[in-house]
Image (cartoon, rainbow, N blue to C red; front, side):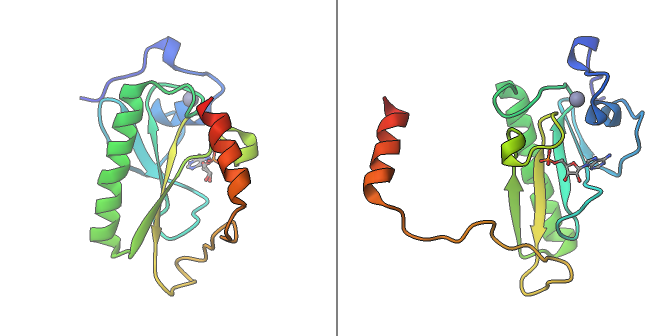
Length: 148
Ligand code: AMP
Ligand code: ZN
């Protein structure tokens, strides 16, 4: 039986907490003790879903290791199910951490996005950047900053 978050794990203003509490509707795909997976209502591709911890936590920087592990495992289950049932050709996992990184709902979640080869009707997605070789001195300097 799935656990119900205790009051300190609920943000009364959070729409995803309301989905966990079933106060808002959702097309639920998977649930376990720690997580809930459901359809995204603004799908980037056919079958786009979200996985979140039941307990409210803002983002990647605040989620605890057990909830993060459970969410990643749920995302893996979903990716396998999408591959099996939707016959998708690939899957993207996406997490947005912070408004500048496109986060709009501040209850941690992982996007699980099925991808379809050469099928713009089901999958209009394109890479959001143009890959190009970086400047090695800049890359080295950033690595040094990260490692300092
Ligand atoms: P992000 O921008 O990474 O915070 O993603 C938030 C996602 O939640 C967006 O893709 C929205 O389409 C989705 N979303 C917002 N409200 C709902 C809802 N009530 N049910 C399902 N998905 C939602
Ligand atoms: Zn929440």
